[in-house]
View 1 (cartoon, helix red, strand yellow):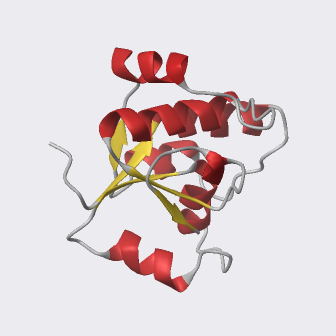
View 2 (spheres, helix red, strand yellow):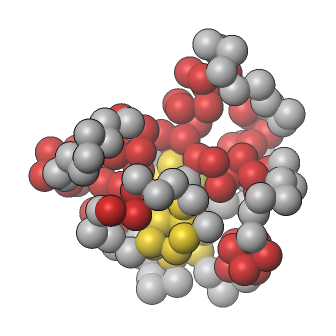
Length: 131
């Protein structure tokens, strides 16, 4: 069961965490590291990373298997409630990124706080932690 300290990582935040990227704010690092928080990553992020890596748009420093199978985070699968939420999700300023939209839908359906640095996502009505 998801509680009020449950967070879903946007794909870029996950990659910043894995790569120990300096763009990850210290405050976000502390939230992710806090063992009292439940941190989830979506299978959607695995799909996004895989597609972009295969297209040569996202070279990986760490293998996809290591990112997800060796992760200390809980993996969130895609379910019907996420698809139904996606169907209700409005378009904001032409924001059509399918990966972002599914992550937003998952966060809304599961009542998770989405950790993201993507300003386009900030326009949606959901709990967001700006990274």
